[in-house]
Image (cartoon, rainbow, N blue to C red; front, side):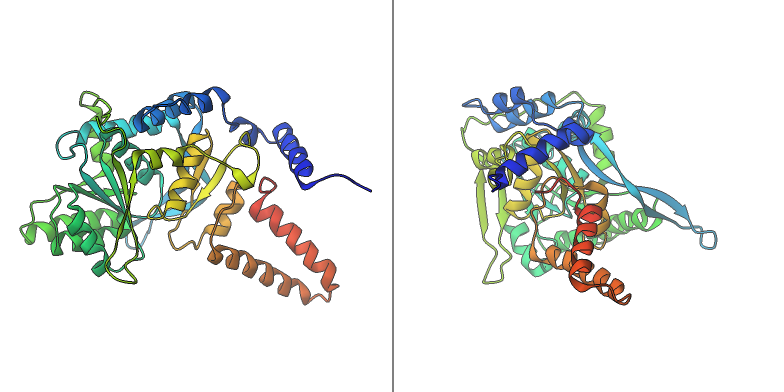
Length: 385
């Protein structure tokens, strides 16, 4: 009788992946970096810099590559997704976050200021979050699925010095500015100026705020980074308070007014200390597909836990998750921590393929096993336990 346990099988498969999967092997957590960020008394900005320096040459964040396409009839340019990801390194992430910090330091962002962020998790979103850590500012991620009537009280209560919004949610951000607190700046991220619709959306936001006599500077994140690169590097802010507030996550407000859960620096630092727990040994690399909202603690923990272990976070291409199965097939994550909606999508893909093949009259039991094995290989890949 076999005495092989599930743990034994997992350990054997991890060993096989290290031997056969170069991307998996290259993402292995570095014991020296793990020990360095576990030092007692290390502050959050110092922890993040230790991670960025320790894994400087590794790929940190990935997003779907696009090609710009000009319509021959209208002359308008759009962006079409390509079947591959482009990545930036930890060094590039840290440099861009540093440029943002230099551009924002003291004016318009003072330590302790709130910055509201409205958008889908992405490379730009993550760079902004890291910049806020460098500045000692408080991140306030806003739910993109919430109604403006639910978001407006949050903006009024937090009085952000900046509202950062993705291009897809720029019009909502403009409404928040017009109907409530007026920040110093409205910063647009995930923006491609070559795409006509996006460029025109930014100009429309500027015009609308100007016509309403709102003294808000509207600028793109690329412009912020370019300006910051020309300025002296801003020093990281370390608060005299040993555990200052670093993050505010608000409830949906479905049972009343939205309520903010306060995350002090110590709890945000915990996000960066990945504990695989139920997933396997801490030495297993973390390669993820990030699509959970940053307005939820789970989204924060999955993303920053991956970065804290030297892994790579790839981002789903569309916030409506319409590309999720294609994204999964391109990434083949090591972890798949998700929500019932995604399991339903995977089940529907299985059912659709099963029904298509059932027309051939194949034996049902054998066919089910064949479809499950094929979809696992194509969509999820061999890295997930």
